[in-house]
Length: 382
Ligand SMILES: *Cc1c(COP(=O)(O)O)cnc(C)c1O
Image 1 (cartoon, rainbow, N blue to C red):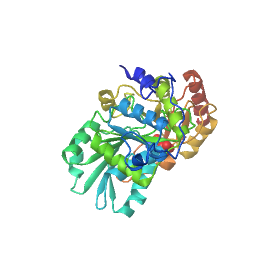
Image 2 (cartoon, rainbow, N blue to C red; image 1 turned 180 degrees about the vertical axis):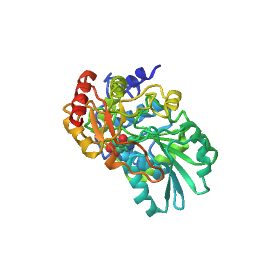
Image 3 (cartoon, protein in one colour; image 1 turned 180 degrees about the horizontal axis):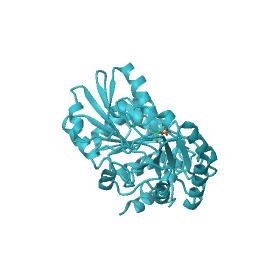
Image 4 (tube, protein in one colour; image 1 turned 45 degrees about the horizontal axis):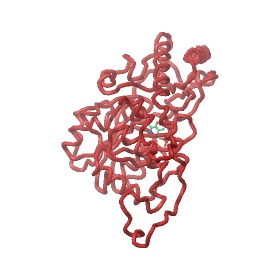
C-alpha cells in the first residue's frame, strides 16, 4: 500500500462498534480486575494512565508503522522529542556530535543542560557524510542530524553517516520534522531514532504542540521507553487526538504546500532581488543531489537569500506582507515568513550568505495570492 492509503488506516480502532476514530481516552487510575493483577498485570494491559491510553496508543502505532520502526514515544513538544532522544542515548563522560545547523533550542539544551550531566557536545560542519568518521573519538556516544537543517537548510549524507556510526557503536538521532516521516524514511536509511515536532505538519493546524520519537529496533525502543518512563513524561489525550486527526490528511496538505512552495520559489528566482533559493528540491540548493537520492517528496519550508539587504530592509519586506504572517512555527495551513539573520547561531562554521536570509513556510492559500503578497513586500524594499 502507498503511504497516502496507510495514513488513512494506521492505528485505527478494531472494535466491533465500528467507530472510525479512537475516543479521547482520559484516565489516571486504572482499576485491576483482581488483587493478583495489581502486581502481575498481563502484557499490554495499562496499569496506570501516565503511560497513555488508547488515543496515545493509536497515535504511537500510526507513527511507528509509517516510519517502519519498532516503537514510539510521544513527547509534549518537538523540542522534547530531541532532548528525550539525547537523554536515552548518552551517559556521563560521553560526547555528542551535532550538525551545526540543528534547531536552536536543541543547541541550547546541548550547551546548557547536558554539561551538567557530564556530556559534552561538539558541532560539525553540517554538509557532511562518511568523513565524520574522523571526528568519532572513543567518547562519542551519539550523533545528531537535521537534514535539511533549520533556517540554512544544509543537508547531511544520512545513510553514509548512519553506516559509519553503526560500525563504531554510536547512536544516530535525526530531527526529521521537515519531512514529517513521510517523504523521507530515516530509519530505513539506518538512523536509530527519528525525532520530530508533530506540532508542524502532522498537527498541521497551528493548534497543538507535540513531538514523537520512533526507534529503529526493539532494543533502541526499550532504551527510549525506559528513559521516558523514568522521567515521568506524559502528553494529554486531547493533543494526541488532534495530532492523529492531522496525520490523516498530512499527505494532501504536504503535497499542496510543496507544490506551491516550488511555484513560489521559481517566481522568486525570476526576480532580480533574489540570490540562492535554499529549498533542497530546487536545483539552486547545493545538496540537491542528496535530496533527489533520498527523498520521495518535499515540504513547503525553505529559505531565500536577498543579496544586499540589511535587517531594516528585511523588516520593511516582512511588514509589507498582508497574507504571510510572521511567526516562529510552520507546517500549519497558513503561510509564514521570518528573517533568520538575528537568530543564526553557529559554533563550528559560518553560514555565508550575501545580505539577508528569509524563511518562508507555504500554507494552503492560492500561490497566486502569495506571489502578489511577495510583490508587495519587494516593492516596499526597492
Ligand atoms: C519547531 C521545531 C522543533 C520544536 O518543536 P516544538 O513542538 O515547537 O517544540 C524542533 N525541530 C524543528 C526542526 C522544528 O522546526
